[in-house]
Length: 192
Image (tube, rainbow, N blue to C red; front, side):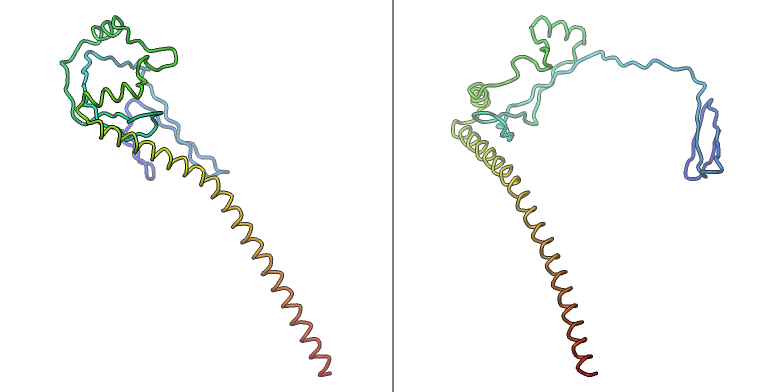
């Protein structure tokens, strides 16, 4: 069935449509009730495909020390593995999720990151440059945060200055108006 409602076209299968108008409020409520039985939805997986990406010097300066590592765009895919087989292998290798939600061993020390980068073919000089760049960016971010706080104070002072200027201009305008009125009264009295 096709129902045309202004700006709304609906195709409803085994559905009843009720339109109720409230004369006082002049609104239209649309109530749709379906006669279809509720279907339990589920999802399942049959296979897992693991990709191994190349390691590159990263650009995230949130490391506490040393050069950051990242994943490159190149990868090697493994053959699809049955999900149950993968889960059994994962549990038997001790790669379980910890209570805080993070896998144990995902945090890399600066020495481990350096070792991974060296193994990936990066020179000691490139690693040192990346570490220095990470430190520079961290310092820049700290400076930005510090100056953001100061800029809020400065913005407040500028806002106060603008408000005081407007008040002063308003007072000056009023006093000039009063002075003009007084001068015109003096001129009128002198003319009379």
